[in-house]
Length: 91
Image 1 (cartoon, helix red, strand yellow):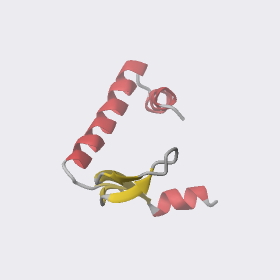
Image 2: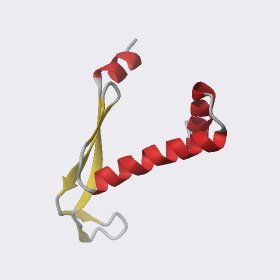
Image 3: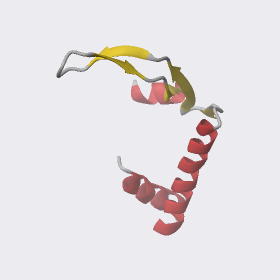
């Protein structure tokens, strides 16, 4: 599902115009992004939780030349599905 399909589904389910649904979906995604950028976890009960995960600096190899390179430390996003989501996928 793409964002436009999600907007259409929200508009249909909530009886909103596509513009209102687009604004709602965009606002939700922006707030999740803002919370994660502040290193705050986002818990959506029944759906799952998003959290920041630190990746340490490590060495790797350039696949073309075989030279050893250093891969910089970074922060990624982790997602842990909630029980309701797991149950929905396994039924």
